[in-house]
Image 1 (cartoon, rainbow, N blue to C red):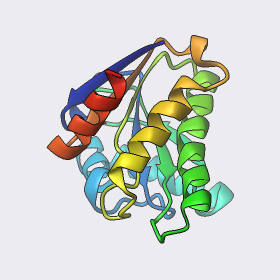
Image 2: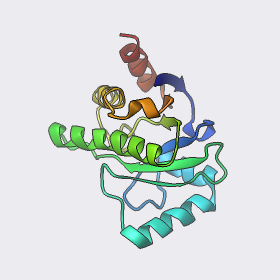
Image 3: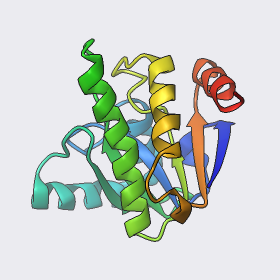
Length: 170
């Protein structure tokens, strides 16, 4: 599996799937979630509503998959990251679940190239350094990583980009 790092807007990434740092309602919101829903169009919202009608809200650490609508990716994997409240052990495990469950869903759907944003580091206030460590370690330790050809870490801001750059070049 190849790990790639880019500084970009995840809604512009051509991949089999991009990951959405969603909220539990799956109905859009701010940050990455809002951008994906706005640029992806009504097809994503419609698919999210269908999922909610079947299962209810998406729990923290879980992931669901929808069409990518108008985005250049084929799919959007929506995962709900933890809101940082200082409970590092619990929050670390939930954030790792976001990456693991997204990768597992990718494999179930034949996805070979997946792009992740910096889950929970925006309005959910997860410490960026800690989140980068968890993201990289979880992806590297994923049990079936040979089934994924490439993981792209997509950083929107300079701070996350520099953190990932340092950690991936160790």
